[in-house]
Structure formats: structure tokens, C-alpha cells
Image: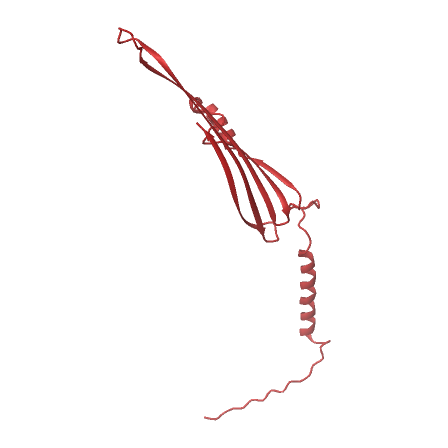
Length: 173
């Protein structure tokens, strides 16, 4: 078996007229233009910025108690409660400290009042069939105050987030 030795000779070529130079220049120009286009802030069709800016506030509330109340008006009126301990009314606020960091605030209030009438034998009566109503009223209150921090990562409309929240709860029975 014979060893074949190949020799390569590099020939200088004219860069200005080569097809490779034209393609490389076009790709470099596209990268520069698209990079500048993506560096702009995200806006909608009317030119309004989409992402929130530093110093802005956002507020929200939990609609579960309202939907539960409205749904039970037509379905089960006996089980209809305004603001129960299980479904308290929660109001949240968020303040953007920086472009990627927000402080979260939470306040929640829940009430529950239950009145139960039980028929019991009347004390001191000689008639065993005589009964009176024993009324029991049960009132509960739940209050929650919370604070948290939320951070985002990413630069587009779809951004990931993480954070934590701590709260102080006061319940009375």
C-alpha cells in the first residue's frame, strides 16, 4: 500500500469580488440591525410601553368570595356566606422598585357568623315533651397582613419570576 501525500497550496484571492465576502458582509449587517431592533423597549401598536416601569403601582383583589356568593344566590341560598374564613377578601398591591424587582403587599379579611338553634328539654318543667330553643352564636374573624419580594428574569413579554412572601395572621374565635 502506498502512502499518498497531498499538498495544499493557498492562493490569495480578491476579497472585494468574492461571493463569500458579500455573504459575510450581508450577515454582519443583518446581525447589527436586528440587534439594535431588539434593544428597543417593548411597545404595542399605539406606541405605549408594555412592561411596567420603575415606580409604578399595581393593585388586585381575589374574586373567589364574590363568585362564590353570586353562584350560590342561584344554587344553594342556605350555604351563602359573604366573607367566610375559608374564602377571605384579599387585596394585593405591587410596587416596582426596579425594572426587575417588585415589593408585594397583601391584606386579607375574613368574617364568619354562625347561629344555631337546637331544641332541648326545658329545665325545671314537669312536662317531658316541653322544649325550648338553645341558641348558639359562633363568630370568627381572620386578618392577614403580608409583605413579599418578586424578581423577574428575561427581557421579552414572557418573563420568568420568583420570590417569597411572609405574612402575619390574627384569628379570633
